[in-house]
Image 1 (cartoon, rainbow, N blue to C red):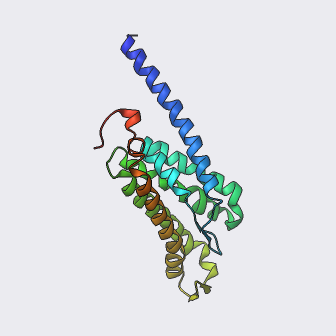
Image 2: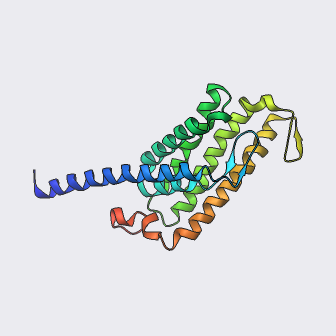
Image 3: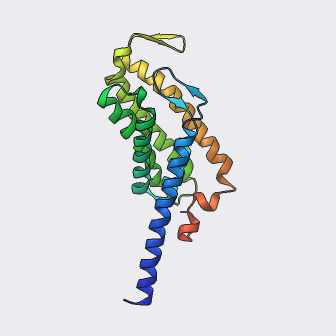
Length: 199
């Protein structure tokens, strides 16, 4: 094995270790932030800064690591916040499936404005999962009153209920990204990992 190949293998192993370490730190940070609720909705869902660390990790490391970190966070949420699950279907959709798509932000790795595009795409896909849960599982709550409005249509109920906290979470994540983009630009664009300029 040539010295160049050995160096490449060593660097690859070093990056894998760093990826796992950052995943552990940022998923743990997301879990901690999930307890700091700006607003808690009555039937699950809250406004927190928890999504940003997951989006940041995905943008730095790419699609597959991002999806896995989202799934890991969903599993932690299910274990520690599972009181809002209505049966195994809700556990699957509202936790394991819902947080995994935040990793889709990894599609925008290395892109100049990737953290912003990734936030919108990841949050929108998470909203879609919650919307599906709302029109299939949580339709039993209709008719119900939320935010002073009585809903009789599960599709409209799910759109307004899940859309309200997901829109707030998306805006919050975008604001955090904007605030941190300049001081952490090199880190967000993963230039410390690749040494390349943003695409």
